[in-house]
Amino acid sequence: MLTTLQKRKKLIALNAIITLVMLVLQALIIFIIFSSITTGITFERAFFLTIVGQLSTIISITPSGIGIREPIFIFVANSFIGNCDISIAGLVLLHAFEWGLVIFISILLTVKKLIFPNSKIIA
Image (tube, rainbow, N blue to C red):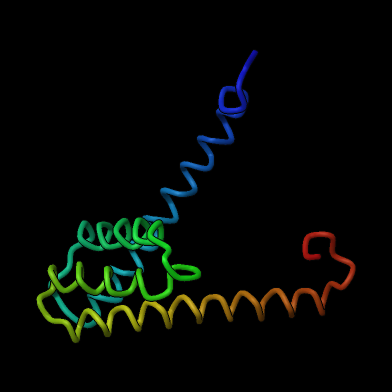
């Protein structure tokens, strides 16, 4: 008898690839943000910040890990950059970019729903 993991190897591999692409894209965003305000970051450090940020969401003392991810991110970024103000500014810019992206996608989906009201893609 095959287990679910053995039956869905392609789906698990696809999930792993998509997760890796998402981590690389987030690391690229962090690298671009911090490169625009300081010179003390490499892509490897940005990728490490991404991994630490994702791992810090496991420690969810509060709903959605609010207040846990940010201090950990700032602490690690500060150890790389050496300036707390730049670390905080980078995190604020990262959150602004993430929320801007969410708002943009929401507007895009709303407009698409208004233009194509009978579309089966958007419920």
